[in-house]
Length: 320
Ligand SMILES: Nc1nc2c(ncn2[C@@H]2O[C@H](COP(=O)(O)OP(=O)(O)OP(=O)(O)O)[C@@H](O)[C@H]2O)c(=O)[nH]1
Ligand SMILES: [Mg+2]
Image (cartoon, rainbow, N blue to C red; front, side, top):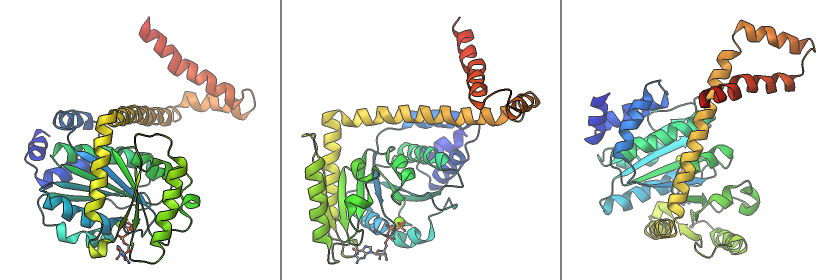
């Protein structure tokens, strides 16, 4: 395991890939590894790119990588697709989009699928960010597809969030009501070569104007055409502006603290579920459940008593 840490320090791609996979599988001794990683981390700027399928996120990221590499920055990319059961090498489409960077030692692209568990995906993505941060990547880009709850979760793992839409996205304010519009720090109207882009920009600007109630940060609405390489440098400037804002306002620290709390809650939740699963296999539990089945006890009462005897009692014993 210490070999892996050495590999990460030396920025070896194989070690990076291995450690991400190891943590993804959530081994019991992953804690040790994370502890070592934590000693090396916390310098990267982590950005999230989210938006509807086919908005051109991967094409945009491909261009962004070129811009960042020209500045000498090392770039890690994590492509999260909650609908895909596949994980490991990049999902085919993304591999094609970003293929020109595949041989660049200073670029690392990884995809993460759900493997059937959404909660696990956010945890695994957090760990992948940790690994890339420890391996000295300056900028880590997290791409998530879709507009639902799971990518909102993932977007809580990053410093700055960009919502990418394209001119066919419909009435954005309607479509993205479910918390996505609110979470964005930057808005990007992608594929601005398509008619309708200007209308989309105006719509989002109006939304920003109506909803922006804090004076300190005003979200930008950028236009980009990745297939022509246009607007990418300007978009990166907006990210930089947001990064400065995060630092100067204290918002960056506030977000990272909140992320820590979230991770603790997720961990408790996971441990609790595992404990519960095991408990329900026990004969004693099955017998008690019979009482509920026969109506001698309500599920409510069972649950309350269960909590009392398993959590509260143990806690008291611990304190006294
Ligand atoms: N007209 C136009 N098309 C573009 C532009 N950028 C990307 N596209 C096309 O949009 C399609 C989708 O691009 P992707 O980058 O795969 O989009 P995505 O948002 O990553 O897609 P998912 O990961 O599947 O959600 C591709 O066919 C691209 O060629 C652009 O600037 N203009
Ligand atoms: Mg993509």
